[in-house]
Image (tube, rainbow, N blue to C red; front, side, top):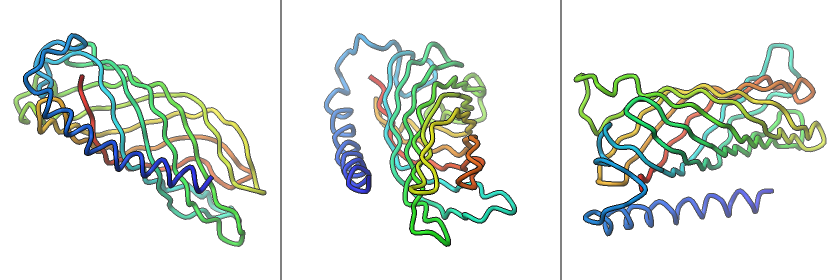
Length: 202
């Protein structure tokens, strides 16, 4: 598992510069998969994203197995239909959650389908390249706590964030939220999340 995580992080580090270079090379090219200016809220089309995910497990009171924060990667992509709404699929992994009083580490894998809304799409409060959003989704995943637990579970995700479209097709994004699940055997009820990464609009 540790080798897979290291490989995933290495891929993310390679992918971000490549996405930036592709965005610059395609600046003047017309892309049939989208419509409008990708740096504004008027754009619609397909997008992909990759980032670093930092998790903060929720250890309920009375739990004997306290898990520390951990980090790994997040991948995703979707389609923005108009100024206000997009649909997104995300794969999120956090690992390295050391469990106190145990030799085990917790790895949390989640796959969610999300509705993404941009409530300030027509407001004049912010420049167009700054695009805040609210995300709500659900799906499934696995909480692997070594000898303590290895179980599939239903998950729900809530997040607030913003995209910063600093170039024609490529931008940065950051979001923070919470993912719920119920794994009492591992002593966890969910995890807080912070994600930092890049987004590419085709």
